[in-house]
Image 1: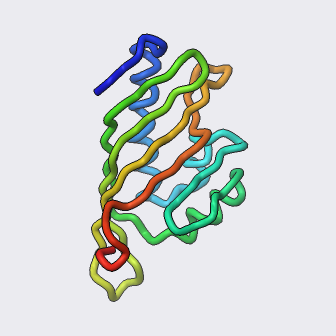
Image 2 (image 1 turned 90 degrees about the vertical axis):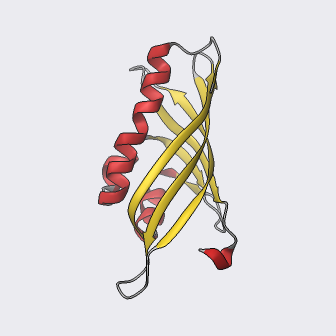
Length: 138
């Protein structure tokens, strides 16, 4: 892992702590709580989809996302400065599409840009991810 001196160990711990909360909420489909982890003007750029801007649109997109029964996030890199940070990593998840189909295993990578808030928290401002698997594999 690479860390730049612009972020304190407290900043890095706060950013890393995000994933436990996000994972719990994502699997529980607690989209309202997930949205508290994003800035009001957040942009999400999922694969095979136009960019999604703002809480209302992000909530609608998340509600249409298949049921996630398992999600893991692996941080490879955190770098940044006083007010902006980025995170690069990988993910693995299990999806359920309908009740009759077998679970789908997915894995991929992501880059997030975080903005420090006045209270010191690091909210997601820009979020892009994509699968490592070919469309026929998912």
